[in-house]
Image (cartoon, rainbow, N blue to C red; front, side, top):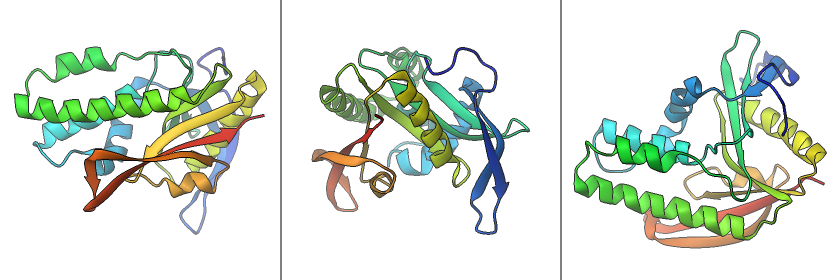
Length: 221
């Protein structure tokens, strides 16, 4: 595994520059704590909230997506500053890794009516399809970046670059990920990733047009 305990794993330098970019110093990469899950949900909710349902249903839907991307493994990391403030997180999956999202979904979806559950099923189908499509391109020497979130500008690149070095040291060959047109997919093209597959998910629409999907990979060796 990348790191063997819950103590601080990596030190990076940081200050808040005049451009508003959080320049790293005295920060630590640690095992992710689920206490910071609400911070991730709050961050991604504007992008991932469904167009239907009340605020409770929207939060439920976003939380499912987040939980679906956090595997039960040791590849769950967060970046915090010297005061313990959460700055960023990165989660990885190997082929065969599992999570507890479906068990959580069964319990948490109980209060919602059938029409909203049906809408959630569409999202679950999409997530499953894209995960399976990405894993089909990988072998046992590859690993997938399943979720990557930063709260402060600049901190996401820092945690990802640091963890990629650790993954390389472990012997992983490639880092894969999938994303879509609702996210800033162009960022990956300028940060060492190569587009390996582009598609369209017909059941969804984006700004009145096609809903495009993207699978990227980054060489680690």
